Image (tube, rainbow, N blue to C red):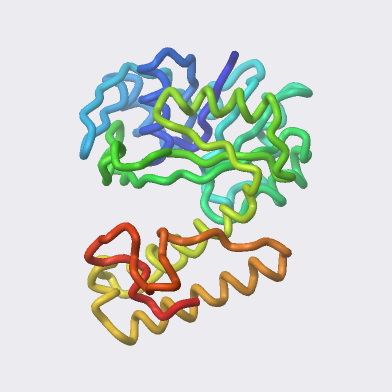
Length: 263
């Protein structure tokens, strides 16, 4: 089976390193030439909560040849129209693109390559790009009961989604869901609130939560995402295990999204 990760930023580099270390034959493809060259010379270095140094097969898009059975799409969505039309040159009739991008990219991806070749999923851990050849895992992976949640757009559990789960399982536990699009919208609230407000304020999320005005902004953002989700006929999953009856966070963390005004 030929596997590609297209877009090896922070998370793509981490996934590629883990998959390669555990026996998968993976082409790690990125347009950042300095990053690709660094991985060619010394492999992929993963730091932070894990310590991993793996010799990988890193290439530039211009070096791609043949066709792939599975492509994990990890570029920014703003590049999808160009990227996906390019990737069509390296796909056969039964190739599958699994988009692990943030947001809700599956419908737009399917418009270009077809629903029959599109699956998706969410990444439930964090990483940051340090320098060419090196990415940092920013949380303890052992604390997650699963690292990925993947599924078909229509919720059907198919042999191909089981196959893709088997690939990602080389890094850690995978949950196959029959409510992929609901999960997508749930992750989008976290991205919009946590990443968005942290970027706007230039602070850490704990600092955002300590500010009453910022918490009101979080509530507004969360409600807007919820309305968009429901307008698309999906239903948000439970976020961060909040017990709405007792108003307590079941994760018992000191700072979490639960302190925001309920959405």
